[in-house]
Amino acid sequence: MAPCYPFGILGAPFSLLGGTINLPPTIYQPIVGALLLLAGWQMVRSARAAARRDANAAKEPPFVASLIVGGAIGFGSGITGIGGGIFLAPLVMMLGWAETRQAAAISASFNLLNSAAALAGVWATVTALPSQLPVWLAAVAFGALVGSWMGSRYLKPTSLRVLLAVLLFVAGARMIVSPFM
Picture 1 (tube, rainbow, N blue to C red):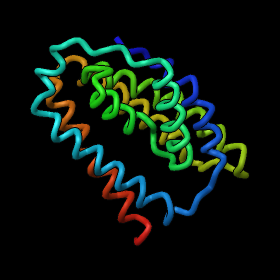
Picture 2 (picture 1 turned 60 degrees about the vertical axis):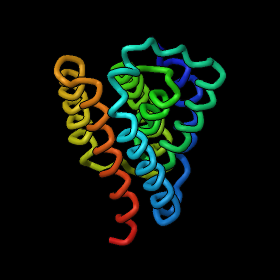
Picture 3 (picture 1 turned 45 degrees about the vertical axis):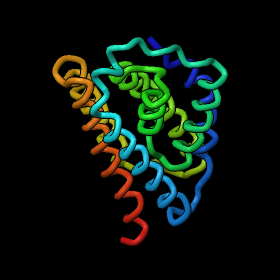
């Protein structure tokens, strides 16, 4: 199984760094939205072959490539405030570094690590965090528990890919449209 730690070694510090940068939404949101839509399209294309591909053993990701990918995704997730797992999961599946369930586990761990680091970076640059933050954190924890339970016990790899594709499309469309609202 592909471990999460190589992606997190540079992912967390670069996410912290990215969290200290405040770009205007009109710059980063359309770019991130387009990347999310592209990742969603890749998930739709690969959903049909998921069962066949997941039956084959995933190859171990190269360590140096994992460091670079983790750092780049961590920096981007820190700047944008989007959990890096939404980018990492499609990439590791597309490259054959993890099967669907492994990619979900890797991306969940990566999200937790990067989100904590990015939040620390934001906290260092703002005077106060939103008062709703504890509610949001509780909602994220609940969603992670339910999603992990359903994904590990009930959803087939193809269903997981389709669900991820839908999430990518919704997030991408929201990122592109939100600066104009």
